[in-house]
Amino acid sequence: MQVAVDARIAFYNRSGIRRYLDGLLGAFRDLQGLSAEITLLKSWRDNRQSSVDLWPLSRSLFTPPHHRFEKFLLDWELRGSSYDLLHCMDFFTPTSAVPLLLTVHDLYFIKDPASVDANSRKHYSQLNEMLPQAKHVVCISQSTKNDLLELGGISPENISVI
Image (tube, rainbow, N blue to C red; front, side, top):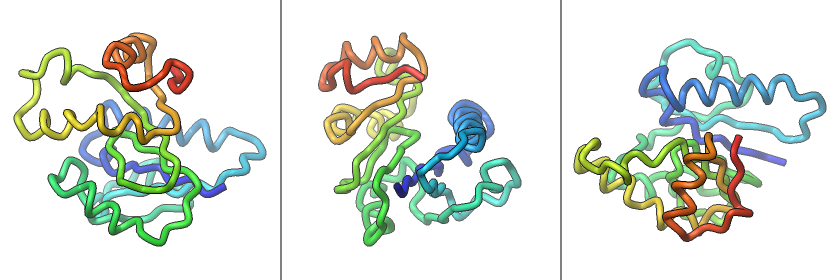
């Protein structure tokens, strides 16, 4: 199985999603007999050395996260890929025929829209559009899962808390 992990957002800083990704990769390394081949999709701009950079399979992408044309540009960059699953860390997904796994870290931007700027509000407002495209959603806490269920558009069976 070919799995791509969209890790582009992780290169903005070393908090939140970056720590989550480091933990996820550590867990993958510790699994015995993992039958999936995991490719990290990362930003071509990142030149920091980290555990992510030491991952054996990676692909640099030019499309920056949260770009207003991200959906179209990312679709273009991923065309012709043979991935069996795409794991999106920032719940933003291309319009792909590849099954999607989304991770939702929190929904603060819905509970307190004033906490983010107008561009971020526009980006995050696409969550309801992205959820139906996902084969499964991972939430990092039961609280986030509960918030997501309140939004609607996804059944509890399609959400796991990890």
